[in-house]
Length: 228
Ligand code: C5P
Image 1 (cartoon, rainbow, N blue to C red):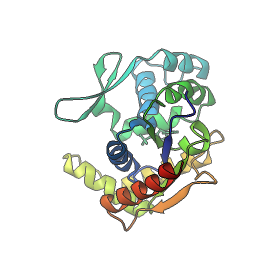
Image 2: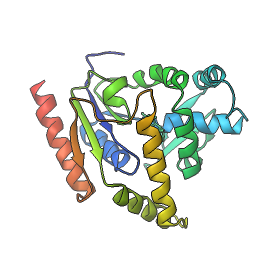
Image 3: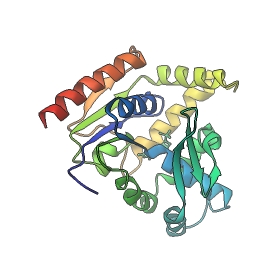
Image 4: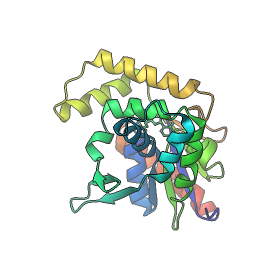
């Protein structure tokens, strides 16, 4: 990892909008993007598909190190994620895969195995890293750390709308429960719990549009990297 390459981290709970914001900010800056949640989803999915969900953590970590993962953009500009040459983009975004990810994410062996993979994304001209522990653990030297949040109610509503737009019917109450459970698991785990870094700038997006949040983060980025 080259420590001279600038990094901007965006951490926060699920549904805070950080995936969308990270993508927009990376595009605007012309920087690389790391979607670290996708890595945990890939490990959870691969473990389930191979019947290894209950395997010892050391075996899971060995499997995680051996996965061949590719992030591509198709001709329509959509992201495609390949696992061992198979397109798993659709499967990765399901609630079920989120649960599988969150289950493997509590294992220190898995977090350790994915650390080097994540550092590998730090390449010139810069990196926008989206996740839960980007600013606290993976890139503690990032010059700008954003912690993006929103109320649990607002996050459940956003997720509900996203799924409805895709024709998937799920009750809002069930989604709220799921989001609260996942928040609890992510913030109470002993390794790399979800929390803002001491030097993070916290932004509550509950009452803001995607454009508002993107603009704010880009202003902070201009101040930070122009000064640096
Ligand atoms: O962000 P996304 O919903 O794709 O993440 C899926 C799960 O992966 C999270 O709920 C969390 O348990 C785990 N994760 C993590 N650390 C990260 C990114 C994701 O533990 N940096």
